[in-house]
Image 1 (cartoon, helix red, strand yellow):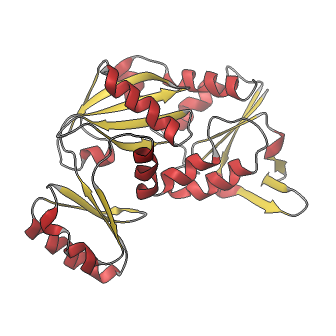
Image 2 (cartoon, rainbow, N blue to C red):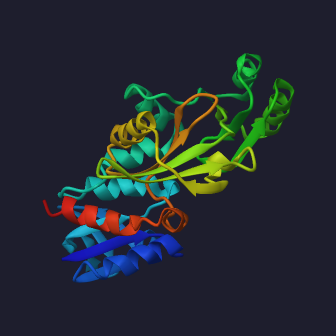
Amino acid sequence: MKLCIIGSAKRTQSDLQFLTTAKDKFDSVLYVPYSNISLSIKDQTKMMYKIIDLSDFDIIFPRIPRERNLFGYLLFSSLERECPFSPQSFLLTSDRFLMMDALKRAGLPVPELHFVDSVKTASDLIDSLRYPISMRIPGADRSITLAGSPKEARTVLDTLRSFKKPVYIEELFDKKYYQCFVIGGNVEAVLEKIPKEKTDIIFGKGKAKKVKLPAEMNKYAVKAAAAVKAEIAMITLAKKPKKAVFEINLCPPLLEAMKITDIKIDEKIIDHIKSVCTR
């Protein structure tokens, strides 16, 4: 059985871990940078890496960052086989509002989030919000800025005004939170993180420890993965000031969680994709 792992040209430590684990479970494993793949449509859809037709592989496993989710959608739309990700998984997690809307429609609690098409409209919301908040330009995580008061928010908006772009304004959680690794409808590993900086929940940072997830939050994690039609995902759950699903990551880092929990998450994922794609 042949496995193709698709990831970035600069392999992460998690990518290398997957490669090492997969080589013990498959007849052959090939790692392909997504930047070297061409998709073409004529009589049929072709996925080519140099002269290799990727559709010949039994399993294709994506390690695709969010900024390349359109590629993930196109890739899995063209695959005529069962996979641990639906094409919609990539679309729904490509945009924060789309993702939160999918979660809300599934009956899950989410942060208060506003999408406004102009800074002027955003300024009208400032006084009605609960602080702290994060503000960002859609699709640009580096644009994330925090505000702890209406006065600070107006200063941020003055800076964002020059971009002439829509703005996301979102309730920010800066207390303890969970990172939950969902595989095949089960929560297989959990970290609790204590932020040091107010942005830590956004970037997945903070002091981490292994914990057992409360039953209600366990249901949230499993339901969140199902809401975006993904069988493999890291779900971030906020604890306070209210319980909420904060983030879904289809391509999470693994090494910290594996070290702290002493759980072989990589092996569980590889075993799961093998079972899904051969059933």
